[in-house]
Image 1 (cartoon, rainbow, N blue to C red):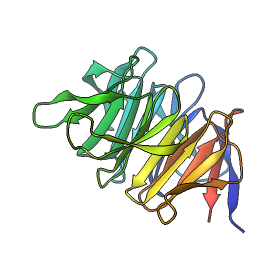
Image 2 (image 1 turned 60 degrees about the vertical axis):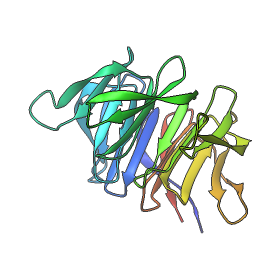
Image 3 (image 1 turned 180 degrees about the vertical axis):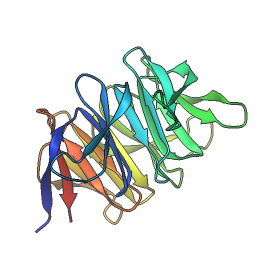
Image 4 (image 1 turned 90 degrees about the vertical axis):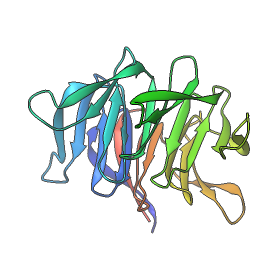
Amino acid sequence: MAGWQEVPGALTAISVGAAAHVWGVNSTGTIYKYDGVGTDPWTQIPGTLTNIGVGSDGTVWGVNSTGIIYRYDGVGSDPWTQVPGTLTQISVGDADSVWGVNSDGKIYRYNFGTQAWDLVPGTLTDIGVGDDDAVWGVNSAGIIYRYDGVGSDPWTQVPGALTRISVGDATNVWGVNSDGKIYRYNFGTQAWDLVPGALTDIGVGTDGTVWGVNSAGTVYKYVP
């Protein structure tokens, strides 16, 4: 029967690119990568972050408590390269698709040509990016938006209310609301299906892999 399987560890935020790319941070900012080996299946990664984004190809970016942005290069004792700009939350579709929001709710998309952040119209507190460039977000009131990229207001409101959202691709969108309820978007009915359980953060991979953490820091993997 489908449901949530508890995984050893304790995290406050989690991100999933695919089954082989699951990363998270805990309440002290310690960074972990899931390797699935033994009774302690997490490998600690040097550095300190408060939010992390992982792409389907294993690309990893993160931000720390002061908003400083880092890209993971995996080299040496300090495997992070600082990227100019400040954000509070970041999401990665793949190596070519990185979006984020800052403390004022401003939305940015990283421009790999200019090596800088392009401002995108709108205001959000959380954003999710798929590896096919599907982008969804929620604002401070819990209102949900899907990015269509057309005109001066490139966002289409989607019914429902969420605080966190994660996108694997254009057909794979999950979120949680302020009560910890879990939802999966049903593209057939154009509505949200309630999924049993309670989480505060959720991560969805392009291959349908879903992980989450609850208010106590307990880590779960969704078993279809």
